[in-house]
Image (cartoon, rainbow, N blue to C red; front, side):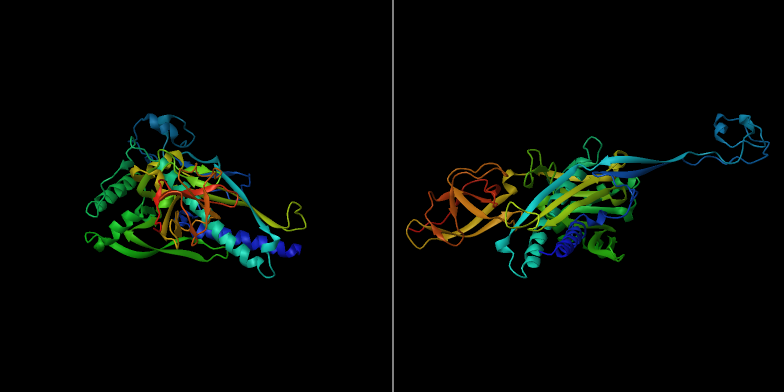
Length: 430
């Protein structure tokens, strides 16, 4: 395989993945240039500037005989060489500094994708690589969005007052709750034009359908950055009192996310997020696509084909002094069966005692999996190796061991991707 071709594939791949990760994210509105050092190249770290500036002081009129002695005059410039405190006038000398703080990017994630030669038919490499990258980029984006949601929620606190637990939201009271969050941000130096609200689908529906709110809703375009060639990228969103609200899918909108060897999952303390209101000026999302290299059969000896190494760092930095510019509403604890879960539809089989699984549904939706298993006892944890059970083929009849079964979907390595939280009933022919 031509080396130049592989290099071109690698360039295309990096550009494609970067566009999906940045431009297609629900948090792309935060991707604007801020006080990050663009020339800082330390791997796994970023450099953030925090400007420190003195406040205003009094202007003391020169040669004013009425000027009174004041200890504060020690900060004023010398006047005509007289250094006595009560003879200083003009401008008070303020202090300014630009403090650069190093932040280590906390999330270092990677995987290796292998393409066997038997799948790389003539002219099929681009299509296969494109399909894989499209799917994989969405998976990576979904994880990063979930982590961003968790970070934002984690930076709020009930004791501080910018986290509230609300399990009674309705179309009638949601507006007043949103106004409370807006007031919090405004009272902590956030300008209205910098405010953004990320909301659950349920809250988005309340805002969009409540007759109490329709007169406050508008559709506007907001700028979310630029492409590589300098073109502005705009996002069309609905706004409430001038604040854009962006719906976030439930599979990436909860607190206390747990990263795993195969993506991410709930933790025991994960709660539903109703909405998060932020000042985008005070948030610093970081994505570093460190490696996306494609290797062909001239360097691979363990199998016939090619492979791609994917390695990225990402983080969302919220400086300590700026965490007050967040406001979060959370709901109930998230149910363990509501994520990385499996549901099925079935019909009676052609022979007595048989059933046919017609379709398998996953949450998150559209999860790619290699195999489906069923058994009478619960499967192990997400990410562990699947053990026992019956391998089934969707659309083909089989004889179930019971009328209710646990189901799981696994990847090619045999690791559990999603499973049913309880036994699911199947239709069995008499």
